[in-house]
Length: 181
Image (cartoon, rainbow, N blue to C red; front, side):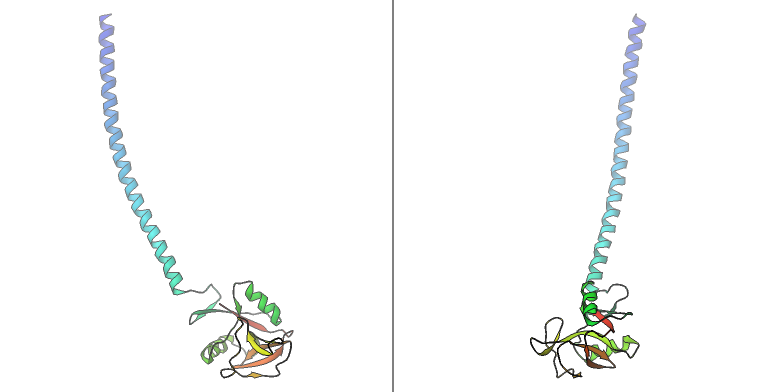
């Protein structure tokens, strides 16, 4: 019986040592895990910082989507198919843009350079019978000091450009078009 008590005492002491050794091992494991966690946290923060800076840069640069061209602060998309003026207008609206509004001769030159052909192209200008004036799709009137419209100004007239000039055309004609935003 005395041997049994000694055995139990030794066995308990042995277990106590094992649990204290285990505690030391756990502490070592925790500090190692904490160190790894800090490294991963640092890497994650760095990656997030890079992503935020990239997003800010793209926003400030004002990049255009693929297949769109950038000129000054605007983006332009040139169609390859043909539609009437109303369908062209709707197509641009569906892409969060509008038919081309030409501000000056420099912009007109950029457009003509990128058309690469001499056919008519719809722009965002039409003759409104209510106002009896040529009006851009944003509601602003045409400045006749900058652009002259060749052809009659009558109901159902829309504007198309060709070779640095703007022409009055029947809105139901089908031409290519330019979207802008």
